[in-house]
Structure formats: C-alpha cells, structure tokens
Length: 313
Image (cartoon, rainbow, N blue to C red):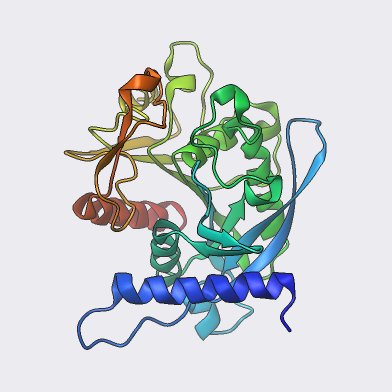
C-alpha cells in the first residue's frame, strides 16, 4: 500500500499525464513523456520572527536532468501559485495540478529547468483565498515571501541545482509574493544569502509599490506579463513602477497583451465575469474578468523563456 506521500505524488502524476495528453497531443502524435514529480518538505514562517510552519512543495526535475547525468546541475525556477491554490482537485490528501501549473511545468522542464512549486495553502488548511479580504488572508503576499525563503533554502541543498541560476515565478497573488520576495527594501530580503538571478510575474498587484515614495528595488531583473484589459489587478500600477524605475540599475520589463484579461495563460478557461472577487481598487459589486487567451499565452511563454535564457545564462 502506498503511504500518504506516495499516494499524493502518484495521483498528481496521473493528473499530469492526463492533462498533458489533452493539452499537448497532436493528431497521430505520441503522448509527451510523463513528468516525474516528488513531494518535498519545506519549513517557513507566518511572519517575520513568527512561528515555524511546515509546508511542502512539488519538485519536478528538468527533462535534461533525467535524460543525462543525474549529477549535472540545472537552472531552477521556484513557481508560486495564485490565490486559487496549486490544485484543481484535492481529495483525501491527494492533489492534481491545475492545467495552468501543468502547462508551466511542461514548458519549463522541456526547456531544461527544474521547477519547485511550493504549496502555501493546503498545509495551512486552505484551498483558496480568492474570496478573502486582504485582512482575512493569513497567507498574505508579505507572509508568503517567507515561503519563498524556505524554497530558496531547500533548492540550495539539492546537488542537481545550479544556485547561480535560480529564478522566481508567480501568478497573481503568487506574483505579488514574488514582488515582495524580491524587494530589497525589506531587511530580510536584503540580507538573504541566496538571491535569485531573475523573476517573472504574471499579472501581479503592483499597487503597494506604485505610489511615489513607496520603497521598491528588485534584487534582480523582473519581467511582468499582463493583459491590457485586466480589471482584477489593473496594469496601470505596474506601468507606474516601470516608469519610475527607468534608468535604474535593475531592469523591470512590462509586457502588455491587447484584448487580454486576468488568468490569460490558463488553458481552456473561457472569458467570464466573477462576482465573488473584489479587484484591486474596485467595489465588490463591480466583479472582475478572468479568462484564457491562447495567443497571449504563447507570446508570454516566449518572452518568459527568452528572458530566463538571457538572465540565467
């Protein structure tokens, strides 16, 4: 009988294989090779100086690492999920990746990157925090930056990770976490021994850093990918940061995609209005728009891979 940890991973891999087949298989083509995932343990904190929090993550090695010498060191991406969590289904301690996380795992591992997906919610007894107010979110973006610290510490112990080539990536709430985890204005970030070489943020909430005088200095080059029509985390705040950082010694690049909304990289997600979400700077009655855009996703993936290749070379 499989133990709880093995059962989690085996069901996750079944979900990975099934969704991969639907998302990537072309007519008369062989299915893609399975992704090999492992559940790993992380130790974080809930706030600076707070109690220790036992977390876990999903570790997926690059295809190159699996196909060649297992002692070879590969670049690595730490990917932070959004407010909806990491899984589409969780039952009896078992989870399946959402199509968005699966697609990213496939793209990155095919490109030669290891990927660690920390789970900030399930170990804290939550599936989602999308409907919570900011005050209700125990796992806030500021608190989750300590989950990033834990993930950086864990990858630093792995013999097949090239620690000179580590990047952060996140979606929405996870992208806001990436901004917090990269901000050298935070003392714990500034004194961190391990610093990522690059970061990619899909549609973050930039409002906390957009006002003049708000301290924000990324520890490494930052690429922000957003839809022009995003009304959940409107891009104007990120545009303000990009403008303010022009001429800085740290690069911030913002890519905006026309006719595109929040969650644009989620495969198969139809564009729809959610009335259960309060967008940044909006009233509850306004609702927010969410939905995939395959063309924008394809362009964003190319920008992301080009950015990572240049910054992690």
